[in-house]
Figure 1 (cartoon, rainbow, N blue to C red):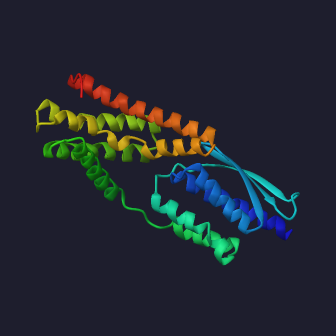
Figure 2 (figure 1 turned 90 degrees about the horizontal axis):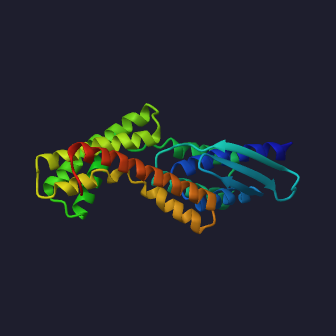
Figure 3 (figure 1 turned 135 degrees about the vertical axis):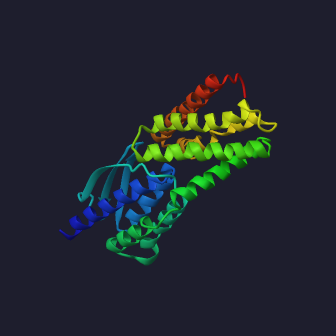
Length: 258
């Protein structure tokens, strides 16, 4: 009975750990390594299949292979968080180095998850500044950078608000790209600065799913073919939505090329 309780508690913890880690934007191979490391520290082997929306995990006792548990859990749609990924990865070494109990692991996990992120307003400002910097990388002038800052501010605010209202994620990207590009199109209409086209072209770069595209490639390289293809297709769909939003602005404003 003690082993049955242990495998059940470990299974529930690892599923919560895995869904949080994947939701934060980690590539699949790293999640598998971390989960397997924790399971091995308690005397179990972990076999798992991870998809875009759910994870199936089987825990098997190394001393008694008849003792096993298979569970399924939906993945959490969290925001990309490098700090959370780092802390959860470090947590996977805790039972290996310090021989802590599952209850202590859960307590440490809850403490990490409760750590406050930047406020949405801080995210808004930092994303806007970052996108303005992208504009400069593409040789945009000061006026173009200011235009992109304001356009990103509006577009990301739209994205935040619509996401909070649980709108379709792809629809959110279309509307956010449209709002940001329409704001940047003012530079083209009124010929603000010497590089207004660059401002329009870079105004939607904050929506590009760079992390997801990198994770897709890494998953394919490590043999997680289905997850890699899934992430790749989703990235293509997101880029297509950005294109739709930007193209709508170009049609309305009458811009033929960037």
